[in-house]
Length: 358
Ligand code: AVJ
Image (cartoon, rainbow, N blue to C red; front, side):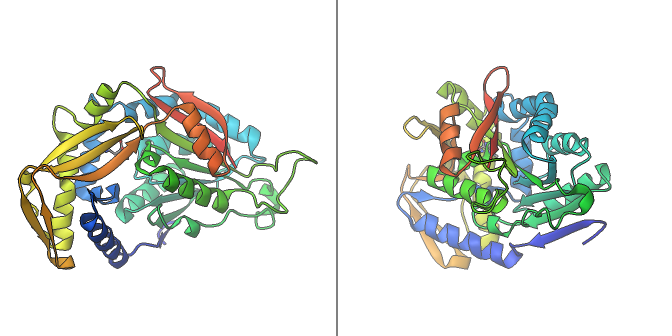
């Protein structure tokens, strides 16, 4: 703890290394080969992603920021209307230190109800910076950062405060807002999306039994809301361009994964031996990033004592990024017990922000 900030680690450096090793061994011995996008984000990868968000072809970050800066007051008013007592706890998944977080925090703090900010991320350093920035802007705010992998550690989020735990003065203020922005949910396959959204719902939503009810036969009073950012379906040519930009930043981001493997697992990948590929999959409605071996080659990973062979033209899938329309978002939410309440898009309808209730 330092100055009102606590950091809870569910992913120590050793656990992180073990998880990377397991993912890489599984993925590079599978047919076809695949690596999870989680491991893109070392310091260089986060820096490259930051550059991606400023590329002319990569509209997503600008579109989501535009929605948020226009709608933040509306989002907060909506939350005040549906969560008795407003939002007392704000959880952000995969937060980094975005200006979007700052926008939301400021709008929520303006209600005078916000007590706790819980940023959740794999990157402990980014969390430290997020915490310091949040405290500087909002000195009374309790910041409880959680280091974890949202694929497996959501059960470890602090439980919502019950009305008994809240003090008499703010008894009603027990509402939780979870934000999962940036379209990152699209990195998950449908069953993983349901798993994540269900885990969230179980953690922050009202209990099935004995939860507060507004009246006989009505919905239980929602104690939690989810603000979800999703990229929308559009002309595949624009999607491919967004993942294969002309300046080659996304290609460098993709290849950086091999640098991570070389450094963390004692690998000897030759980065020049792999070409960046971005392809639209119309059946699955997702963009895929792949690394294509430009010649037959082998790589050795000392930490795994594993030799991996690649044929010429063989591809390793490194990321899927699913694109949605409103019915698809609604379906994913409903499958996990969330009800879509409001839907906002940017004027060009490139990106959507959904407000869902538990
Ligand atoms: C940060 C996961 C939302 O899927 O668009 C950007 C990552 N990959 N360019 C995305 C990414 C290639 C990004 N997310």
